[in-house]
Amino acid sequence: MRAQGELRQERTPLGDDVPNMARRRRKRRSMTMIRDRLLQIRDLLAPDGSVWLHLDDAEMHRARSVMDEIFGPDQFVATVIWEKADSPRMDAQYFSGRHDYLLVYRRTEAFAINRFAADVAHTERHLAYLDVCRNAH
Image (cartoon, rainbow, N blue to C red; front, side, top):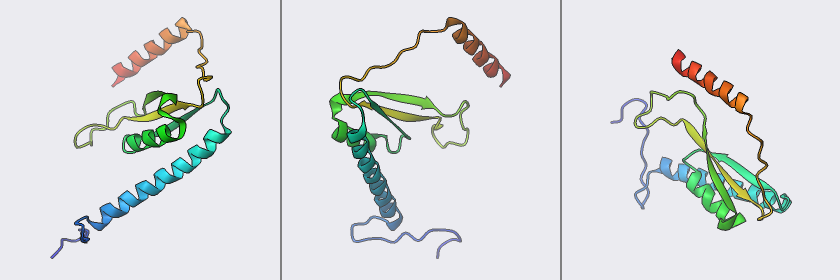
């Protein structure tokens, strides 16, 4: 007898439970959708253009494989880690998920980063602001 709210784990001949199979199917479909759109983007992208794909760690390795296939592994520029939360979530069982990823690929070698000159005064104000925020907690 199952407890109230407990999901029934149906078994297939392969031994997988049905909810996990459905989850894997959804992930494959979503990655197929991403792949189709990246193919369209690649064809429209200027020679000096780049693609920045935002995702979480659950899809990172799949997306990297798809982007390598579409743009080529030699067109990989960087993995940018974006801190999406300014404080850790204390409800995580093991580690706090505070960041997401941006995969950056270029169309061709013509891609170049447009760098801005560093504004020292702005940087100092920003660092002082961060210090104030950290000390407030």
